[in-house]
Length: 403
Image (cartoon, rainbow, N blue to C red; front, side, top):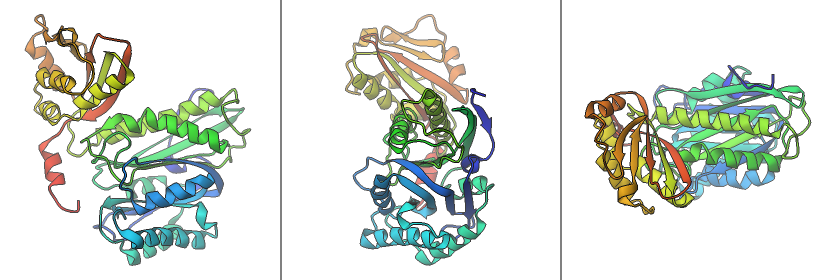
């Protein structure tokens, strides 16, 4: 079974993990706290927001990830615990302490994550009650409940799991994520947690996760805004019984492939569920003079409000696309630019593709999912990004305080 197989279970698909999702009353009537626990201490790796404004929980996780070992992750939605000063850090530490005490594990092996409104003090009475409820609710089948409990403006939970044979034994990996708005590469207002029962050396696990994030969560954009709480954590508890994996193991590429598939699948789910999104779009730039130019051009298009609103209106206004390429800062020669909507040519040599009927382009824009490929025809470098349109509903969602 060297081929990867999709399985059920999400964050609890791998051996030795339990999870829970409960309602603590932080926001409305929905579940708003999740807990993930490994039965044994696990090798841990993490990637965090590059925003210079960071939530207290991110700061705490960044300190604890240095140790490279984790056993539990407590998560709340509805409050970001960001820009909350010294009290915010005390509250983050208290969350970890309570989990550690209830589970009888070491405090520094508990990671804390929060998502929601910035600048509001944590409702610690509700949080503490919720942690007690979450510990009581822990279950080997609790992955689904946990995935639902971390949602904010998400309309659907985001989870996936796979298994395959590595080193002669069956290895499982599962993950969950949340995110729908404030989504921009490096990273987004998103949380993602991944668990595996593979035995993996910690330094190799960190390298693997960092690379996986670069080709997944760092290639998505909903609205061009970056959060201060973005966190991706992976735990590997070794309960599959394989020989510890690292770059020297012959099956290392198989494990890397599993992590890449988990992160890319979750990243795509985030964009597909973008706030108010009606279109899922893959934008690619090829033929750029440098990797930096390809990156500039592709993100300029993906984050242009003029482009994104035209997608919502199903208007194949390629003029907005080529304009965004032109101001991106990338090297561009106007009469060398070609643009394709799926396999339909819109622009050839910087001008309208005369042989293409407008109706062909309009038919592409009517689809729920399509691609735009921009060929600069200057060099050999390329980049891509998953993004979506900007709708009236997005404006409505984000015009309401404390959504």
